[in-house]
Image (cartoon, rainbow, N blue to C red; front, side, top):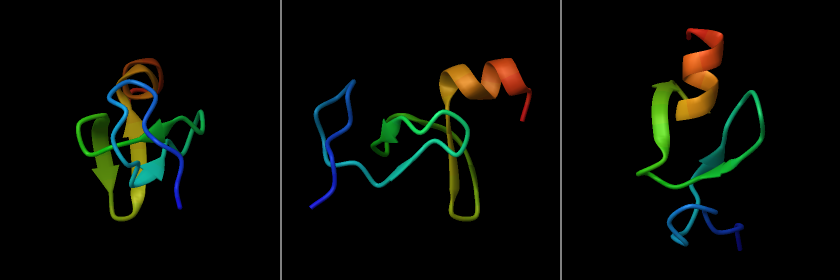
Length: 47
């Protein structure tokens, strides 16, 4: 069983490749293949 998303309390589908935050489908700001990034990291990294 995976850890729940912190923001939405839904089942996570992965974690941010940069910060490790658990992400549900609603939290993913950018996806590159199987790599996921949260909104905060997308903004700070410019990916």
